[in-house]
Length: 314
Length: 322
Image (cartoon, rainbow over all chains, first blue to last red; front, side, top):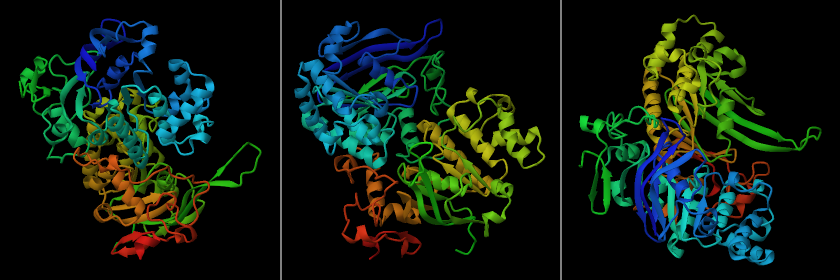
């Protein structure tokens, strides 16, 4: 359904732009739940923004293709895009209170999509909006319809955000850190809601998260990113049981999911992406790095539907 | 317990007035902390766990004397805090704040930031003491960091400076409010390992305020769980995590991501519905009853008190105690 090939994105002009995304490729099938995991600066959000064509003005796509249902998303006109974004591809972001319009009643924000994409009248759209608010389990939807975003709790605002994203029954949902500011008990509720749509309606979910715990409950397949590149991709069970890339292993320890061995702490922090290391970008921090790792970017090794970019396996 | 607690809080209450306008007199209060008692013993880290709005940060600030409680008493080293000079108390109890980006003055160099505690307390110090502090928190070579401004440091490095500043006066107790929550996972590990190793060097005790149970498990011997301004459970971390008695603790632990794709009950059947009610007008009786799966009629009538259920394991629930 979605195919990204050799995607490269730089931020900023000049001789030394930030090399935010470098040669990222992946495929996504209908109904699949795939998670992109990485720390800040890993490029995971930039990939999602490129798919939804919402990259900030400073970003430049320097190469690669993004194909959605046979159509190339890069280089589409604004008009063509409007038929896909919001209709075929829905989006949910972190901090729902910041992307809902504070001056418009939440119900009207949900019904807007029905008027734009289906040409429904205001009343028809309103009843559709109420129905979808009920589907995302907003209690007392009829009353909440007339609320403004500031009257909602964080969890409730995210439900409204999901209602907006799902109003036109998209086949793909991009969810960028959908629960990172929510409380644990509310996070479980929101993730359960997304999982239900994934299972029952076959909604494909591309989840962007820094939290491996969240990913463990949501994803079928996991892509680990580091400093703009893919480090490893595998099904969720392999990632958690048998992580292969040293960065994935470090991340599992850091997330307090895997046990910490003596001294198993990764030193330092992310490299400067205006001048990334010439070899593997994780090599300056990698406990297993060799001379080759510092010189040459790792080649990909495929194994049973999984892939890892690491010289340990090449 | 044979040793006297470093800090003992009794019936701490903090109500914040809700103002509608400048001239209107407020008659509503946010009951942020509503009658909390706890004791922190030397070298026994205590965790304060709860969701946002439960009052854990407010309680932490009261225990550092950054804000005055509406009611209640605090004893430090066996004497009421009122009998201690503010400076003496402050050199013994230091806060580590949540956000290292706002905890350091952006206009001051690291040298100035680290000198401040010594200057305030009139303690003689040399540059070597500042470099020693920086080295101890892993900022080496320390001399190179002295003349930098906070914006030149990464989030992890800033948190190291915050910790160095808190340690400068060799406090007995450090109140760490979400010490790693804004940091990347690999940097979190670095900071937590640092806190652990410094505890051995400085023999300090930590009060860790966090919503992260895995962090608490690795750092703290005892855990207190808060809900809407009240303690609902208090006991050894091991027991609280493995045998939680309060239905809220049970739900909170079950909501926690398992980190194991084979165990997805926490997503498949979320333990509780709804949000935390408002602290302005909390439910009568037990404050958790509106979301509690085991709530009975009497829960609305009587307010449960924190009572021992097993050895050193206290719970405030009329259902769990009987």
